[in-house]
Amino acid sequence: MANLTRDFFIGLSNSRFLNKSAQKWGFRFGAEKFVAGTDIDSVTRTIREMNARGISCTVDNLGEFVSEKAEAESAKQRILQMLDRIHEENLDCHISVKLTQLGLDIDRAFCLQNMEDILTRAAAYGIFINIDMEDYTHFHATIEVLKTLLETYQNVGTVIQAYLRNAEAVMDELKDVRLRIVKGAYKESETAAFQSKAEIDRNYVKLVKKRLLGEAYTSIATHDHHIIRELEAFIEENQIPHSRFEFQMLYGFRQEMQYELAKKYHFTTYMPFGNDWFGYYMRRLAERPQNVNLIVKDALYT
Ligand code: FDA
Image 1 (cartoon, rainbow, N blue to C red):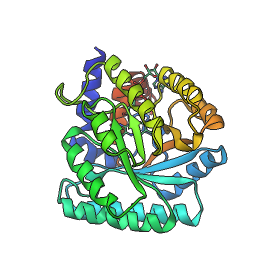
Image 2: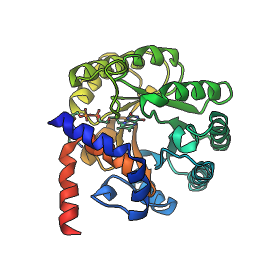
Image 3: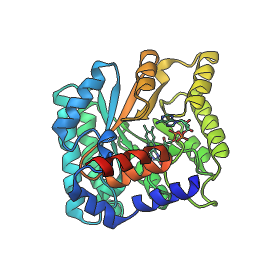
Image 4: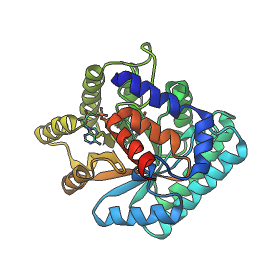
């Protein structure tokens, strides 16, 4: 049953039609609990509030599946404006981007140029850019684009999804690069990815521990308190310097735990904003079907 619910919401998240339609609906079904606003002004207010509590942010200008160059261009412009805002207001914040929003499915050279424009401005301001990892059909292209960018820029990193069977090999190839380690949010084939929670969790812990023993910066991105406690014990036992890692969680999830972790470690909240909320929100429902009651309440009371 849990797998059916998960597949259902992941199926919805992949619907280009629903993703496009939802942009015109405004927030629905409780999405506003997990999305920090529609525009740069509103997300800036939320970043300031989080910064005041000692929490860094990474903002995601929501959007994926872009198939028109003009759309990718306007996404890039918004990201550049967000960079200007972070710099002008001295916010404790970096940016997460998705390559399919910047034209990966249209033309790789165009996408690369968009990333170079973003990274050049971000480097001038000393701001880091994280490339989120999308579904496996984009995996190799994303890694190739990253490797090209790393020839020129140091302020860029990406995400390793522990459900992928090749995660450890790719993580090792990128051992000097700043990486975020996650379990993985998409539905992938048995050939590409572990399917059981136990195998994914085991690989997650193994990958993070390996990274923590290395030199490069690691973002430990999970809401799983069992895993967090195990990693905290490992950090303590091995005296891992706190300058080498941070914890990350998504905006709107486990708020009390976010505050608690931020008192002990560097902590970053992943903060999506914008009208293109549908795919992101459906993936969150796939992970945690308990959130479906938000949809029901929203449908009943609005
Ligand atoms: P999981 O969903 O496996 O939950 C484990 C246990 O934790 C649950 O059984 C429950 O006990 C507890 N729990 C979880 N959430 C809870 C809650 N809200 N309240 C109470 N208990 C809760 N994915 C991807 O493919 N590409 C990417 O680029 C990213 N980026 C990213 C950034 C950040 C900052 C985060 C936190 C996550 C991502 N992800 C991602 C998503 C990631 O791959 C994964 O799908 C989700 O984080 C869900 O997995 P968890 O590790 O959080 O725990």
